Image (tube, rainbow, N blue to C red; front, side):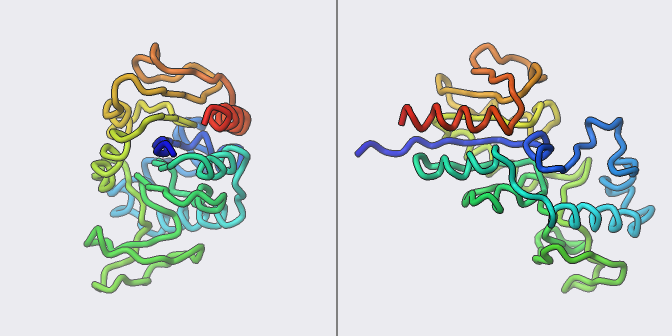
Length: 232
């Protein structure tokens, strides 16, 4: 029996839009009425931690009620036929809710909190709010387990290694212009099949050797999954 092909899927905010989760890039830097620079940066946290916590508590509440869409479900189905690893820039849990088993979150997870002082002091909080005065084990204020603008991306090296092992690479719902995540496609092996699902033209520099599916994630992903399964 031939060895299963390794499929690596890189997803961004566009895959979750059809589940009702908005993206800040489409709203002029405002997200649910918040200036993104004030709630997604270390400087914003220092200035007004309560505003930051309120913003992520709202996002946690939205995440609780959000359901996976057809794109998430199709990627979970793909695991029945291939070895599938998902690298997501999203902090939501929709891939996991859909049944995907191997998900690496580049930018953290909304259902976790961490110490304000030590990056790897991380706890699961589910969909409960974080309040001022909630402390980590080291006594510091708990903050969202989210990578903010200007912060290091701890899982980037792991993501690069995973991408380098792909036999098939799929990019969904991300323009891949924001670094360092945008660098991941450079680690893909030469000559593999690469797919981008995006209703408009992707913004990264050169897609001449990519198959471009010009559809939204919810329709384009199931279509591609059916095609890959039929070839397996």
